[in-house]
Image 1 (cartoon, rainbow, N blue to C red):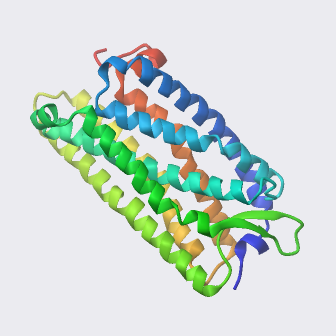
Image 2 (tube, rainbow, N blue to C red):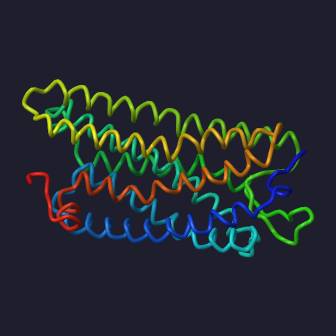
Length: 299
């Protein structure tokens, strides 16, 4: 069976991915650490459901961003993994957890906004931070469980004709290859497709209600449309290419270096969402917007 991770030229990845991951590490670490401090201080008197979900999203991003220096060194050294099998498995597990925790909490934030805008009386009477905390705990448990098989499939391998050790998420043998493909396909449906439908449906509901409300000015409607459009664009750019190319990549047949390199680039795009999340927090929370821009929604 053709093993793209062993036989493809790594020069393209070496030129592109270390600078990309380096920029993402700096921006995501500073942005999310800053957002976490502000959420824990400026919003502590107003610990509503949106803050709970956003705080969990920040923590998820910070957990994974700390592993990016390992990837920067890995790709800079012609994909030579020198940190051992355990670190390889943990990095792949944290990547998977961060990816699907991000997707699920983006879904929760969108549903929370939908309920608050479309059903405000229900939200005030029945939705409280305790429910958000319980939901957050359930999400972490579910994502940890569905990410566990990564420990089975991720490992280090010696590259053919190269004096390097690869950290890969694949296994030898056609039978195991199809098993891994089935797992990735199930993960894409449960962890991506279903939340995608819920997220987009929630934002469409928000747009419909806002644009039908005659008491909301045209300027405010444009702001809502811009925010919703930004979130949907972020979602599409970060997650759609990754999952499509991941399915192509892990399918045991018809592999090629072009598909493999495209998949590696899509992983960089999936990680990009950590850099953009702080901008979404600034758009939602007045306290963060005041510190960053000196403006609040009232102004």
